[in-house]
Image (tube, rainbow, N blue to C red; front, side):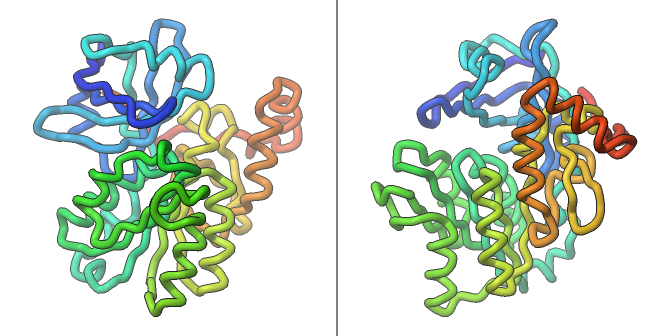
Length: 294
């Protein structure tokens, strides 16, 4: 049992939990994810790591209740626990493998949309701890749905908050804020965008026009988390990739977002899954090879 030692409701249907998982905490890096299972017959739920504390042996996750399994998770409280908590899975952010002095010379901007703020946070925190400056644009539909603002302010060099309805901060989307910053003379060497698929698609459309290399996290399309289900199959350039084992981060200018979003819709039905498996043959599954454990 992996005990929950902290639970907090961040916004409507969005929750934070700190979980005791020493082996995951001792090995994880920003950008990776875990799979949690609640109950002997519970669904495997992939969740990006929001934070970790190696000394305490804890991992922090943030999730939104959108279906039966995540809604059931909201009923868990401090003292309860998960039946399984597997990780770290996926590849760490490429930032953690770069030369720190080279990183310090780069002008980096993050664009976080909605719950995508959770996986952005550990990367920004890691940069801050290593003396690397970065700007963060974080937004949501309304002020009430913003999460982790105070935490992000502590680690971001400059934080720009946006809301679609203008109820707080800049009135507009992350792309509007980025364009405004560029128009004001800001320049960036790298953009990292994490959020809903449609948001990442339009960020990449803009950054391609602006000539800013962009990394995106394709965690929204993961289901199984080990490459076996085929849900997170996507095209990156002319290569077949799987978000859970090859990613979740990829060159956003090479990702075929239209195909990924179409597959996401098709995959929701049993007939759709069968058709995808038939059409894609041997490339439907990604295999394993990167599974961790606790």
